[in-house]
Amino acid sequence: MRNDMKCILLTKEEIAKRVCELGNQIAEEYKNEDAPLMICILKGSIVFFADLIREIDLPLKIEFMTASSYGSATVSSGRVKVVSELDNKIVGKNVILVEDIIDSGRTIAYIKNDMLTKGVKSLKVCALLDKPDRRVSDVHADYVGFIIPDEFVVGYGLDFDQQYRNFPDIGVLKPEMYAN
Image 1: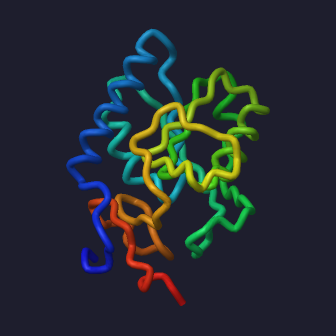
Image 2 (image 1 turned 60 degrees about the vertical axis):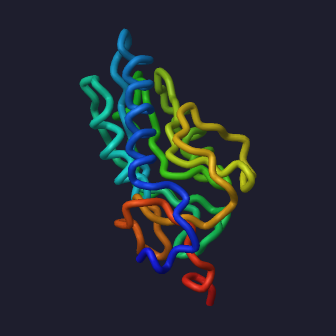
């Protein structure tokens, strides 16, 4: 897989260090409040989510939802598809949405707007990666791992057409790997 990368943007060691820092920050902010309900936005966030929750020294509850605006493309389609709903599980809760990457912002903006109408106590977003150069929705993460340039990245849960999720680093995929 390494040969499919134009370059390595973030090593697994850099990622692990930053995930630990994010976990400690969340634990500190919620130490005197109800622990947040952590919601993993599948599939891309699963690796980040698993590592992050192990770094939060609080009695967490977790949930999963599937949402996407990409399909098997390299850019957002502009239409957000939410596969799972959490209506009754979020009322009155502190909620943290865990996302792999905020790119156009459409997906996380859609989910946030929907959840805010359903009675959450508080709602925050934790994103491993933030790509502000691609933003079309006015949305920002409360916790950000890394701000990255406008490159197509894979690894550490992020994919191209369901491949490369198991690559341990985050790399910039060579254009010839996804160009048709």
